[in-house]
Length: 154
Image 1 (spheres, rainbow, N blue to C red):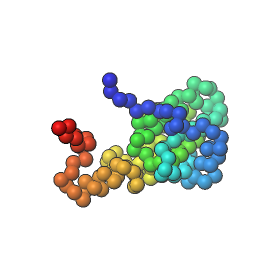
Image 2 (cartoon, helix red, strand yellow):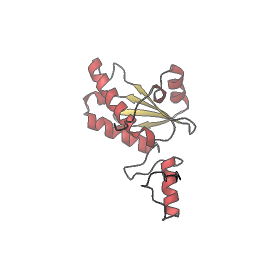
Image 3 (cartoon, rainbow, N blue to C red):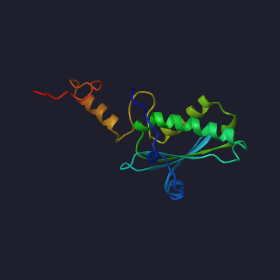
Image 4 (spheres, one colour):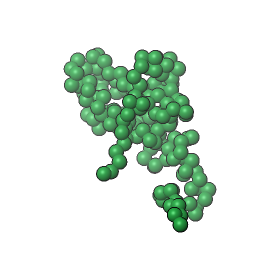
């Protein structure tokens, strides 16, 4: 059975104090569909917080559609993101946007925040992926596509 990327409870912001910390001490990035409050913490894994109020869409179905699209994209990107808290605050324009537009806006905000790179396969500075690629550039004999070397069981 193939391994799936999961979205465990440890990857979510759940406490009001975590949201407050991201709002107060995090950097802000804006997009017509979302606001992003980003608080870097290299020692912690990437965590997602979502704020989608009734002002965005009066119907729960619409709010849940926005959250579902963001959660799915974050789940797929989580391994490549720099550690820290990422709180997305939806704006009313998000209610009328397609899921593809929501995902594109999220990706743009994360790139602007320096949390992930464009689809070049590079990670953010300080992540394992960027270190592996930097090592590969310094040593062309090491392939970044090979899994960990097999140990001799002899």
